[in-house]
Picture 1: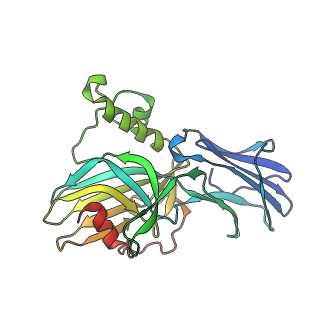
Picture 2: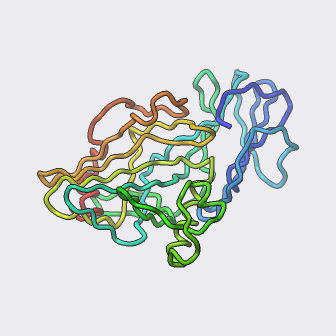
Picture 3: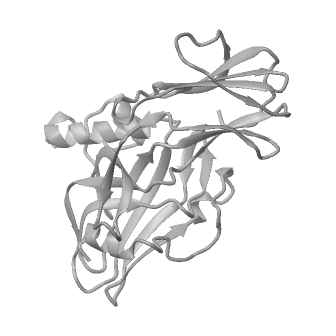
Length: 289
């Protein structure tokens, strides 16, 4: 879906994007595009393309004029931070850590192999929210997902269905888990089954002397690369560490992504620095530090 290819002249192509759709047409140096968006919370697991199709009906198209023959649809993280809530307040005690896996809606660019961007748009619509005070807060994309953490030596009992099987989670029968937890896990599995979303691993480590209360997570994406792994989009791991001196640091870890095909290269890739340069106090309020 994300590789460069040479489209035929005077032919429409379509990418199916888990409920949303993107169409492209080339006629010499004329390029036309159409994007059908959908609410993020209503997405479906159905993604493929680019496939030759008939022209889209009832959708307005935009136009660009540019030389070039090879193009690719390239997903990248949103420049606006993502804000995600924990399903229940999570307390991480000193010396322990927890992991979260989240599927993030991307911004899509249609790029020529020369580097020019012909089109940019977001296939999934989400609400935005201002978090923090008027001076140090940030406008965020508010994702309708509630997360449960994964912990060391944890076994996840979920009902045997196609979503849980796709995640590789253990199954112990219907009586092993409550209905509300089962519903939450199945909803998370639905998002993680979508190949047009960016799957992001979040690790929260508590190296401080006090418990760390996690209610919401803000994910800034300035230094986050995006890769393709077996047809799925994955990002670098976000590591949030509560340190012994009471500060909060957020770093990017790309060790698990080495050797994968890069789909999006961050502006300052490879820097191992505090990611949340402008929002440390913002994150402290979120996590209770």
